[in-house]
Length: 497
Image 1 (cartoon, rainbow, N blue to C red):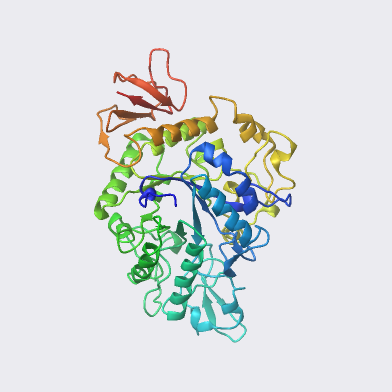
Image 2: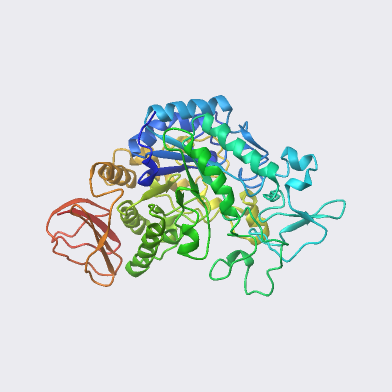
């Protein structure tokens, strides 16, 4: 056993997008054996856990988030034996394994849907006015004239969580993977399984329904009944040794509503998306950090911090360049709670914006013109020879040679080695991980916080260098500091006082 049942409270978790992480069999698609062979890389990086995006049997209508068999591995990713070997070797290196769970919907190739077990899905005689998150109507008509609900792609019918058979099935799915040694679950669309009674229309609105997550509560998200499900799951997680956990992907309208997902009788964590979407400005970051810490106080649990994931543009591009991305990373890794890193962000990869339309595979692209493929391009491992891939499922930009893991390995100033250094300090420094945060006085474009004992974190988001006489020793900076000790624009620094 790995020990420390509360490991998740301040863990650094690395999200592996299996198709794009590492390819062991040379077919152009990443696989579980590829992940296993790169465990040394993740160990050297310094992460505490890896989170695997879906690897289950799937027709891949939505990158594996359309699951046809929740208890098996799709052949493109390997086998259950490969999964077991990955868990065994990861645990041997002290790395825990979290898997994605997709309970809001299945694939239309799932045996239940194929067998016509309609009571396990949401069918009705007439559609209402709900829209798909991927654009267009959320209803598709079958040959007999009935309509089924799909909040995402038509190939992803929503499950009917009012059916006790659905609830029993997912309790068994949890046990299946827990018995195989997984340490936790990331719950996809954790706010979406329960729909309002009667499936009422949303009614008149401005813009897309998918964007109505502010003060307006839509009848298909964040319904009170979803918490009954998690109260059924928590005793299962608690019945296994070693600190098994679950983290919610929950888009909700307020800190108070998000806090309801987290607690001793429900889930352990919920993703903090507001931090991910904050502007690169001291005021924006501080507003979100204060709000997030308030949410955490409501339930007495730590918050999570994330800058990139498989659904949003990479933060190198979103924040306006590598210097800002490096600075934001040092801020994130210094905040109290846990941090989630995304597939290749430690290499400073930007969003790929110029993929040819005919190569894009995101189902949202066909319905809205928006695509998540640009953040899912495979990781460049080598500086040449196809970046360590043979005909990858999405093309790797020719310009990525200097960003490859091979090119950055021995460069002390590389982004890869910045992440390694930051994670090493985070593990060793008593001020980092859990604990408290104190705001320090600073100019308006500068964020200044202190972590007790004696670690000061400074982030300059302004346009001019700043000098703050704090004394102490610089432990790490995201970029070169001025000769006189000034902090240039778009730079963060950790100082030991």
